[in-house]
Length: 613
Image (cartoon, rainbow, N blue to C red):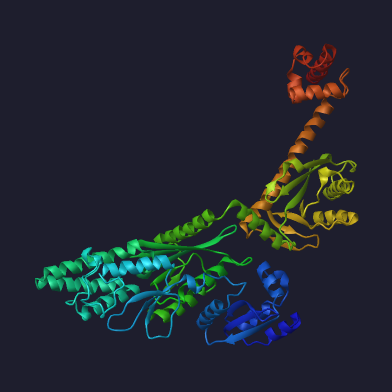
């Protein structure tokens, strides 16, 4: 379908909630989204692309057709969106690890059911718990639950192997109560299994209360041995959440989220709190396609994290608001849990501090896993996409003009190789063609003309041409540079660096006047700001040197016996006019002949005497 056909189809959609699927020409789903009003949301994709993010422009350019599914409410759209993302793994959606990374715990049927780990649920009448975290951690957590309740973890099969052999080593180590012995009833085995299920369902507090009541009853009945056994199991269960992250996640009554977008890698962190104490932490690195906003990332991650889970916390703290998403997620999870699940963004107090802690955990994990090469590559890749370049820029040149009124007009050319300054390629220019008046635009035209002419002449000091020209100034400066590049047939992209009131580059602008904001991407903002400051520093330094030379040259003009060579010798030795003026004849004679030294001394001191009379 053409863009106009897509736009017409979108405008025909109703103002109803639902899910939309964007597909390429092969029919592959490349993006899944949800909306309160499908017409408004989908039609935005096919309007003027100038307001779109880089990610959206890239995605829309590949859309051949789209499909929609209408639902009755926004939270139904959220559930359906998550299901479709899992099914299609669209290129332009945030994706967590696939289901193979999240194992389930399966409880078989029968008189003596057993727990096992599986990758997926099946319609086989068995009971399933999860999904949980990594397979290794889940195996450890399950073993810890079985050990706390002294359930068997060996390979013996019940009831077949009951009484067939002596109890194994686990029984003698106190890790199992020996249900392979004939005197152990099946009822007790199944009671322990039900208690294990309570733990896997996150009902540890309820289980501990029940066991404590049972222990007290056994003690009152003077069955102290049974009471002591219950006490030991209560202590073992109470320690689970402190030892196993997976169990901590089940037992937690509050989850605190942190989210961090780094240069190259992104990371989320979830802190699991139980009764105000930190019980565990989960972190996961992931890649965000193109320039996904943090709000979009958070909504996608939390939906994929919680919607498949059977066990949910009572409270979820998010790092920032996402346009009513808290209410939608709370409604969905409340319906799933059968009780209220609070989802909100803490603003102050202890919970706000916990949110900061989670953010710091996510940032530290992402930065630890990101190399400097990845940061550089990511920054240049994002910059290239912002500027619509065919590839990330490897070489950039930046120009700035500096002057004091109409005198000593100079320019600087700073070169960056990737994200690092290439100082050996820096160049500076003294403006020659202006006649006694400053003109930044004319100065820029002269500098670019001389720079491109040297390249055209084959001067290796001005080769190769860069991937980008950055001009200190706005659209008119960029237009002046484009005019010169056009005369030489040079196709290098040109951008002006637009400053804010604090003299920081807030945006780049094309010669056609299109502004490209950079403040929302910290890595790009820092890089362009660094380039602008370095270019300005190099220009100002050269201007000061030039102005100092001019001032000294004029102060030493018309002194008998002091020509250009001797003026230069005095400048190099003394540095300033003040030092020359304060030097006596003997000191001056160490630099120039005595007759010239006496002439210099008379020049300054006779002038002072004339002023005083």
